[in-house]
Amino acid sequence: MAKKTIAEKIITGLIAEGCYEIKSRSSKYRTFFNPMKERWYYVGKNGALRYNLDSNSSSKSLSMTYAIDIFIKEGEDHENEKREA
Image (cartoon, rainbow, N blue to C red; front, side):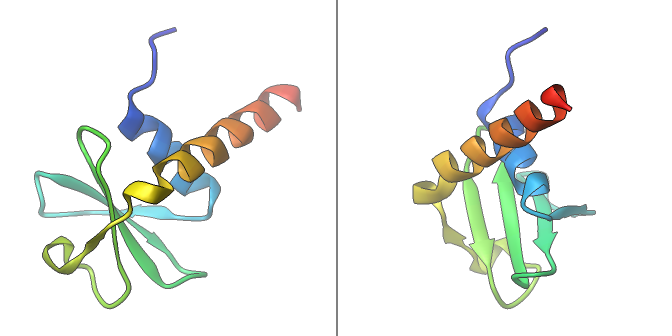
C-alpha cells in the first residue's frame, strides 16, 4: 500500500469530522464543508489547510496550520476504528 500524502491524511480527517467535498473551480484547493460547524475548509495539494466561516471563497480564508495534526490524528483514529470493526 502506498504511503498517504499529508493532503490525503487531512482529507480523511475532515471526512471523519463530518465534512463533505464540494465541487470547486479552484485548481489550488479541494473544498470541503462542515454543516454542523458551518465552516468551509480548503486543502492544498501539498497539505495546506485553510478555512472560512462566511462563504465558499478560498481568497478570503485563513490558514489553519495549527490544526493539521489534529485532523491527521482524527483521520488515523477513524481508519483504525474501521479496521477493528
